[in-house]
Image (cartoon, rainbow, N blue to C red):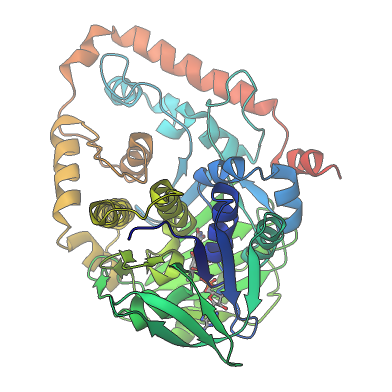
Length: 494
Ligand SMILES: Cc1cc2nc3c(=O)[nH]c(=O)nc-3n(C[C@H](O)[C@H](O)[C@H](O)COP(=O)(O)OP(=O)(O)OC[C@H]3O[C@@H](n4cnc5c(N)ncnc54)[C@H](O)[C@@H]3O)c2cc1C
């Protein structure tokens, strides 16, 4: 018998759990959605920078932008400013914008390289959101050009789950408070029931494991092996601490600063700044890493620093029997490009597409889900490694090791293709578009070895004039935009 999953149990009430409950309650009104969480255990409560795709999640679930920003002390994010990654003192932006044509005679970066005019400044000056970010300005794209550039948000992770909880409950999801102490299995290996510490039992047909790093169902109960990425991404700890606003203020971007044994994030919220130091214990001890973070704060710390421990990688399979892992229970890549929530969303979308009202997904569809999610993790892993392996830094053991590591084949091929042909080789299941890869290559000073002969179809003087015009146009457009702070006040009606 292959009847549909009618009783869906979500295990865990962090960002992953409440995103899942919200989507399931919205997309599958015929099913019951019950979420079990433990206030006593709490949530990880970090993860404050996001990716533009979150806006699609909000749109699909009818979530209003202003209400979301108000509830979570949210701010706008145009991208990330990378400091000291290529070399100490060097900066570049990776913003959610495009560089227009990426091939052919009008290829913007190709003409920029070809004309080689110092007066043009960095390639980022040809990209509207990069200019906005560097000037601290923000406005949503004009209505008539909604795709002119994209944007994401920063928010207080400890408030987001609560915000979604209200929405999910209003759409019929149920919440059960309690600590799960036992997982009962069915004869076929799947999960049947969860036993809570007070003896209550929660039964279901499909279980979504959003239990965080503990991976209660997928890892502990089903013993799904972990695929370890730490040979490429060796960071294994993070200190996180909020601080009073100060320094550069309410920047419309995250700052990621490369340090001796890892990197630090700075994320501005409406009421405070979120800070963290992601590091590898192969290169620095916890105490020194904490001291290093505290040195970097713009203002006084608002709480004691918190230590988080993790291993980069993912479970071999994401969907096993009737258990689907989402969020930290299924895997974690370091937060350099704010991709964890993006991964939750990708998993959710793929999963919901397979949940039919009349039948369970076929084994082949589940296998396809697992292959797809593995690819998504690997493609994002490669993109993150790109930031490290192109470094010119040799001032500490971490950077020397990162510059000389053996790369995953998939990334080695992409780098080879780019250097030989200027081709940004995109495969299926990419987390980042070609323009993002270009932003990192350009920012890190990694250019193709040969110029594409088709560029010569445009006379040099013409290309130069077009680039100067574009740069001057963006500078003028951005000068007329409000500051991020002013736009936010307007949006929040304050
Ligand atoms: C240092 C760091 C920085 C990060 N930065 C970013 C970022 O900038 N952007 C981004 O997108 N992501 C980031 N992330 C990831 C992000 O924090 C998570 O993806 C996101 O919060 C989802 O977490 P989760 O819901 O999977 O787990 P959690 O928040 O840990 O939730 C787990 C839930 O399971 C429940 N639970 C566990 N065990 C039991 C039990 N026995 N019984 C009942 N309930 C139980 C808990 O109570 C909790 O409700 C970061 C992560 C780390 C570690």
